[in-house]
Image (cartoon, rainbow over all chains, first blue to last red; front, side, top):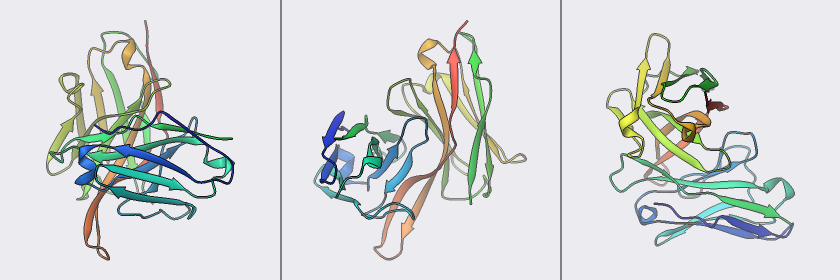
Length: 106
Length: 128
C-alpha cells in the first residue's frame, strides 16, 4: 500500500513537498504522475530523479527510508492538480497507486 | 511515438460484461519490456490498477477484481482488450489503457517501471 496526504496547499511561488509512504518505497523507485481534470495522468518524475522532456525543472523527486517525496520549487498556478505515486508490490507482480494528493495553489 | 486509443461501449447494463479494446500504434504489442495495462478511475476517486498483460509471460490482475477480469492480446490487430464480468454500478468509471515500461538506466545502473504512455480514457457507465 502507498499512502499519500489527500490534500496539500501551497502559496504561489513557494515550495511544496508531496509525500508517498510505503514499504515498497525501499525496493522500487517511485514514479510520480500529475493529473488535471478530464485528462490522463502524465509522468513528472521517474527513476531516481528524472523528468520527462517538457516537465519543468521545478519538479524533483527524492526518497528516504519508506517515504518518497515530490518537491515543487517555486510552485506555479498551473501546477494545481492531482498527484499520484506509483510502484510495484513486494512480489514485483502487482501495481500499486497511492490514493492521490490534491494540490491547491493559493 | 507510441499512442494508445480505447474503444468500446459507454453504457453497460448491470450483470453484463464490460468489454473495451485498446489499439496500439507506434509499437508492436509483442515488444519485450512492455506491460499492456488497464487502469480505471471511479468518479471523484483515485487511480485503480485493474491488471496487465506481458506478451511472453501472461497476465496479472488486481486481487480485488481478479475473479471478474480477463485481459487478452490480439497480435494481428496490435490490440489488447479488457473484459470485466458481472458489472454493477460500482464499476462505473473512466477506463484508461496504458503502456508500462521496464527500463534500465545505463548511467546510474538501475531498473525502473514507468507508465509512460496513456490513452485518453473512456467513460463507462453501468446502468439499466
